[in-house]
Image (cartoon, rainbow over all chains, first blue to last red):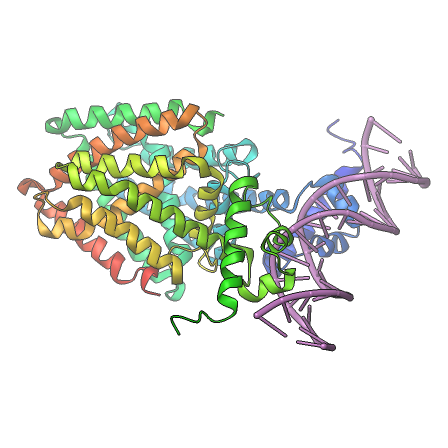
Length: 225
Length: 225
DNA sequence: GTCTATAACCGGATAGAC
DNA sequence: GTCTATCCGGTTATAGAC
């Protein structure tokens, strides 16, 4: 089962490769399924045998981008020590990795908005990808001495924060995402200060309430659906 | 110019009316432009003469929903006095108004994600609608005694908060949006506490930094594009 | 039962005649 | 301003081939 690679396996890979190449060259909308099929050397109907929709092909693309982000984060997480530097490094790595793909990031958001979309980060394949993204933030917290109860709730929160930054960047028409870079620098600073503030004993009641709400959110999150 | 209503004006209205009726009955995706045209008693091509795309018709729908929200907020803003009750009233009113239109709200998000979309709340017609939404939150703050510098930055922030709630609601499959209602109640409470905390003199440095970042965001916001 | 292909269908959008 | 005819591309139906 591992060796022989059922016949179609090769075909499937050819289709993915063709799609990714065309997506990169022409963008998602401009790439037609007919073009993908031709590039892969199969018929249109055959392409649909492997991928029931064009969006499903996009998922393969997002997986690649995610892999690239994880790779870009490795040196940061290995070398940087403070919460601020680690978070900053991960966020800037992300910006760098997605830089060539503004339009694609917009599509990911559209997926997030629609629970029925195969691109929704709360269902199926994409949910797994989201969890891996949160895992990245969990690793950001490693080696920092935050109270356990706070650290436990932070990864999904930081993931959401990251999505917010991406949303800003999608609309950012400054050269090289200059403004988004500044936003990241300033907001990371604020996030870190707020997290440390939250650890202050004087704010215990507010912290408890907030954590409880976050736990409720997680418990009933669409993530579990 | 006011009286005679240029010939097509009537036609245009018929098309909008037809579209809104069908959207409500069958949903957006299920409503075809051909059906809209037929319902309005015009040809397909003629419908496109007035509305260059189906999305443009959706805008008319969003305007109606917004009007309904403003109306639903009026009694709240007239009667309630504290920040908490006013904000809670406005948020619950929103939830109630959009209740029948979950799928449409998802579409609005998809618009927000794509700067090129005619539904983007940061451009043209829809930007105006967004500003009116922020205005609603500005009125929430009236009569509360918040520091001016904080109050000045809150409306766009609260608008964003509202969008977050809507996003949650889109994915909320509990009966009657029960979970979203609870989220609103808890999160409004937290928001109010945080705002009041931010007014604390001890947090002056953090507040100043945060406000400065928000001002920068506004200055370069896509809203101005 | 796995794979591939051809021929439609459907609906958003456009062209161009009147 | 209004229509008819058409394009275009995602998607589906279906018939065979391995």
